[in-house]
Amino acid sequence: MKALVYDGPRQVHVKDVPDARIEQPTDVLVKITSTNICGSDLHMYEGRTDLEPGMVLGHENLGIVAEVGNAVVKVTTGDRVCLPFNIGCGFCRNCEEGLTAFCLTVHPDPKMAGAAYGFAGMGPFWGGQAEYLRVPFGDFNCLRLPEDAQDKENDYVMLSDIFPTGWHCTRLADMQPGDSMVVYGAGPVGLMAAYSAMIQGASKVMIVDRHPDRLRLAEQIGVIPIDDSKGDPVEQVLEQTNGRGADKGCECVGYQAHDPQGHEDSAMTMNRLVDSVRFTGHIGVVGIFLPQDPNAPDKLEKKGRIAFDMGKFWFKGQKAGTGQANVKHYNRQLRDLIHEGRAKPSWIVSHELPLAEAESGYQHFDARDDGWTKVVMHP
Ligand code: NAD
Ligand code: ZN
Image 1: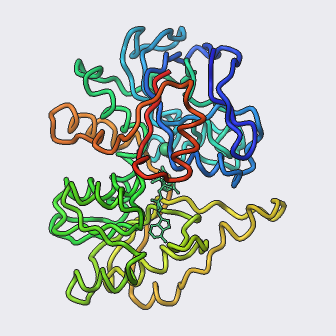
Image 2: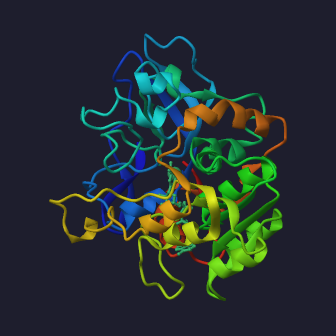
């Protein structure tokens, strides 16, 4: 089959690889019809991780069930399904509690929790930027879609990651109707966090970035754009909130945060969030901060440890919630919001490409070229 393979930093190629196939009786094989490029793919693409060459990338997948293993009972051939990016077993303590991003069964390293498709450090599972994807524990990890699946494919594919991840960020921040919210980062994840806050009845949503195209998109759904290349974003948030700061905040950038001039400072968004959120406010953190590995080459050092102002966070009595999104936990509800026409996350899709053009899709999205907000590929 054809698949997008990671061959090294900024080296990804569409090539022939062995076909994905049923390996366990609980597996489901899915013919992929839509697969997105994510900001998380860029960590690997840019060579910021220890991913070995040869991995098929792609964790935001949707397709049609092509084959099921002998022990699969719920999912059948021909079903249109969306695949949450986390792979869970469904029966461990964490999965039972809905914490499927921290499954205790699937990752082969017993010291780890959580697994995902096509991801550095998240197990050996190939991704879905390919013609076919093997889905372990298929009954648990396939979200079946209703009869409008084909018409709304670009909406439903966002259920694999960024819509639930944005939603998760607002839940980590304990956003309540009537709260004001500030989101750092207007990439696909930040835009989905702002969108989720709007749907849940925030009184005012602000988003900080410096890309005019991304800020314009946010403005189109009623979010207040804050351009940090035009002045201190904290001052701008305080001006919008009677000098007190937003009730809640979302971190949707991660350790690759930088200033508008391009100088990296991994702690920048966390420190600015503490300054932008009111005393006793809550902050959700879904941007990725890679753990520091003492044996890692230079590229990983100091990326997990950041210069976070713990003292100010403590003094302001704030709370923070972190981690990967438990996609499965939100999937059924967000699917139904799409089905009933109450949510349409495809508004962020800027480009649809055949898989054959994946390399150019990666280049443009990585460069944050003007207008390249979210890329969906159709193998
Ligand atoms: P992206 O790289 O497209 O977007 C990041 C945005 O942040 C860019 O628009 C960039 O201009 C902006 N930015 C950089 N520095 C900034 C600063 N100092 N202030 C404000 N904005 C700044 O990526 P994305 O797809 O939106 O993903 C965002 C983060 O979320 C990544 O770290 C990604 O790995 C992570 N992520 C986490 C989960 C999860 O489950 N927790 C899921 C998906 C993605
Ligand atoms: Zn993703």
